[in-house]
Image (cartoon, rainbow, N blue to C red):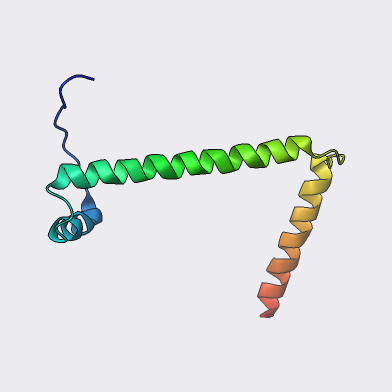
Length: 91
């Protein structure tokens, strides 16, 4: 990788979070905070990818027959309608 390129980032409300991390003394500068945050984000994404891959593998290995999509949506619409109806009644 080449030499690092400086970038400008508008953090908005997250600026206070950045400052808290800097004030903690754990980080030397804003770049350290951002690098650590990106590592944490990369880790979270990798974990989520693994969970999704496992879920897909389990689904693909499931030998039960699938449900027709029309039947699934019919059940979902009925469930939503019941919830809306009970919400209107205040239940």
